[in-house]
Length: 223
Image (cartoon, rainbow, N blue to C red; front, side):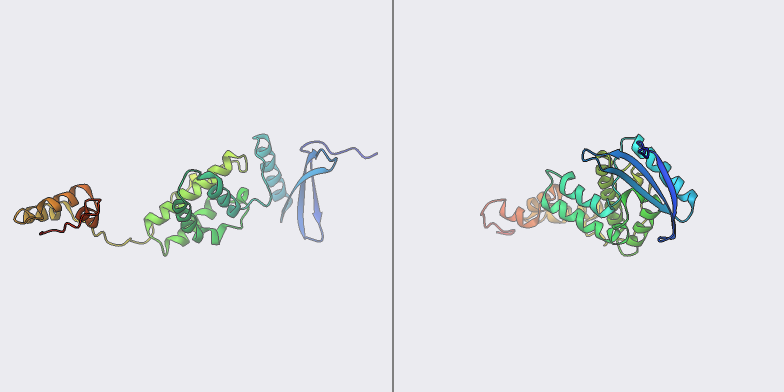
């Protein structure tokens, strides 16, 4: 009787059909008696040996990699389970800002994602998005991969190795400068709306809220 292949024992062979080297690692047998295996492939035998070595390191670290666990799936899991307690608006915002990079790397298996892959995707997004949006996108990716890392689905967070590139200039700020605000306050001292202007500038309250006082009041400046 042929001897059963033990836990984490490897085999490497040439697949004529696929025209690639294939490596198989045995993960023993499941409760149903069926053999559980993981398979990798590469153009050279050395490529396969390196991939098997990386897989062994993941298994030794307690990581449970899934061959079909893509970046898309990692992000979907984070949005569904990693943002508990956050508002639907926050979840929708993160989903929206991640779309450009997921269009490029979303189908890539998470365990095969490299820092270079991620940076290239951010660079592409930076061609049309502001620096702030690129930074938010990177932060969201880092948190999504950290969520997968915490669930033993990947051994390291490559996003933490990447510094996001600068994006496009954002829209000019419409806020008053300190000098402009001081000039407005000085000018308003001659009018009855002075208190109204002070309230708006010092609290940041919206003008319509200040006019209504947060109630059904119909007070308007100048009355």
